[in-house]
Image (cartoon, rainbow, N blue to C red; front, side, top):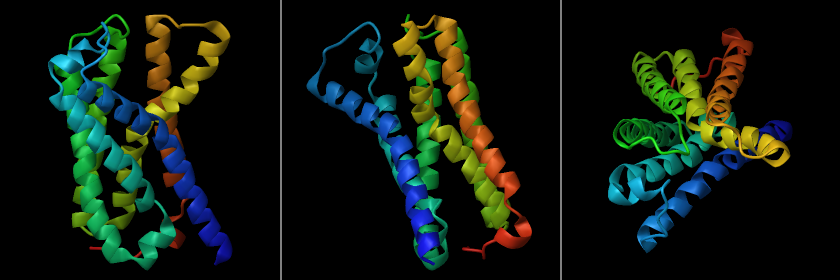
Length: 217
């Protein structure tokens, strides 16, 4: 029991640590918007149309932090009512994060710091997150807990892509300097791919016969 609880806390701490980077960056961006600047060529679009940015930061923060708690097995099993209630909030926040990300990618001009390839990645993984969330909700409405957990893991993996992207980009930036537009886009794309690969590994290595939890609906 003690070992299981330690594993729960390590899982929660690891997910929150990974979420810290995008959450902190989002809070900093909101602070800049509230203060009115300074404005640069890269962020002037956010000042011109702040609504999707505000929605995105708030949604990502709730989805990342509250979502981390949802993946702790001990909490799910001991407090199923809390898991259900928090899951509804996480689902709404995840949809808000994904749709606001798509909104920004679709409406904001592509600035020099970005590229058409990165723009395409953002749209691709934004829509992938929407579909994963939708399939996760459909699965739990059908009381299919295993598929629900699998699709929510995929959605959460995409949502934490920004944290992994930062970890991937830091070493090349320190060792080699500023990457090319294509290089930056590929590293950003790799963040989402790595997270999804880890999620798929976890999904496929768990045996449904031994790890299937009871229904929470």
